[in-house]
Length: 86
Image (cartoon, rainbow, N blue to C red; front, side):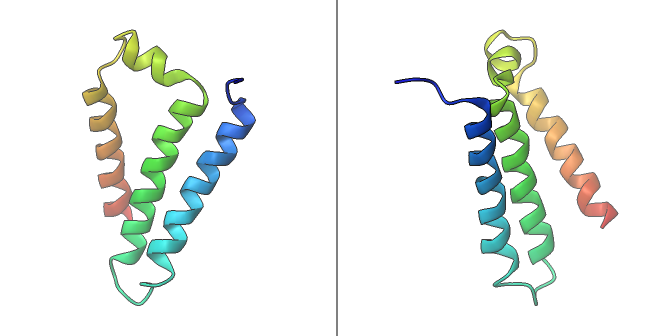
């Protein structure tokens, strides 16, 4: 079986970003937290999905150039800034 191309991986990530946005924001748009939840979940999928689709997950995690904790911590800080900014 051939490995997936970058284009196919990006399409998978795109669907993975759009589906939670629709699932979290549209049904609960009257709630104040729905925008924050949809943004956080979608951005998290985008962040880790792009690492996967570009093949950089191996570069950063498996070769120990960066610890997974550092990536998660940087991601969490960005989410906090994004939430506080809105």
